[in-house]
Length: 374
Image (tube, rainbow, N blue to C red; front, side):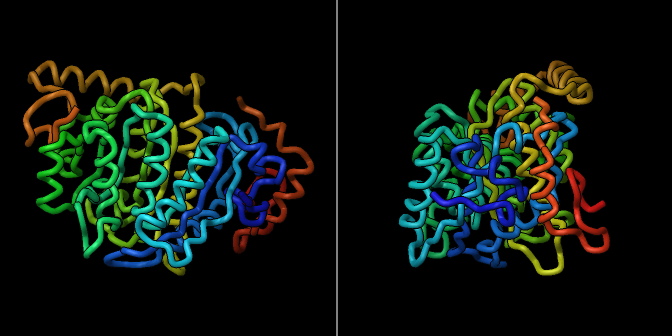
């Protein structure tokens, strides 16, 4: 499997930290676009994410480390699909993900349309048979078929539910679906947290903890960027109003790692870059790096006093009104769908030389050392 060098890899990092042999993390671009139904351009998503990642800082102040140097991040060259579509395209992705998992890599798959997610999810399921799926999206993607195919971006979760217990699927941010999907959720116990229910306070002030309570110890994350509000994420094929913001989303993952649960893999899909609008690209790149920092957090966790206090308030509210926590019981209208080390010194003088090859931001000069855009 061939990898990109510093000019095109994720974060634009030096070869000694980005070869497949030396890296614990593997980024797999899967620029597949075949069934988009509104706006197009998702095939350009992986390339835009990698380009924007050159402007993401290596150092994460929350975890006080430079993860890319501690663990290494290899970026594979994009999958070439040729004329392969549907099942054949998914098989192509699965073969690569399977090979990376066999090498013990933490795999991040970049779409592309959401159809691609079925492949890495099922590959991870084979390794982690009891894992939960955390699905962030504006859409349920639970249609059996859409526009004549069962391998549509609108059907990926239905294909996953054929292979794993739907009660181990948790969806967050849903605000656009058809009757068929709503019926499937109720009948099969998918844990769906609708955007309107979250906004109405159905799941308490700390709704993030209510989500986490539905998950098992091992969690795979599939993240469709249209989960975000169009105000911060206009570059996606099917944007929906009343979406979510970056900070409240990170609080969801903070609650996840604080609970002791472990992220075992992830994919990020549906970025459709728009010329002249750069912030969605760098938002997505930074999101990926932040999720990696959380996935590799281990036991050295920061303190989150605000999350702890709101979790206690949730428990008090539940005790006061006798409500059951989301995912553990309750009626359909209320709960929606019932189911179940720092190492900064490693950036040496040789790495500084590589850093100067990273593109300079307009009007701010070339980057030197560990600083960007200064």
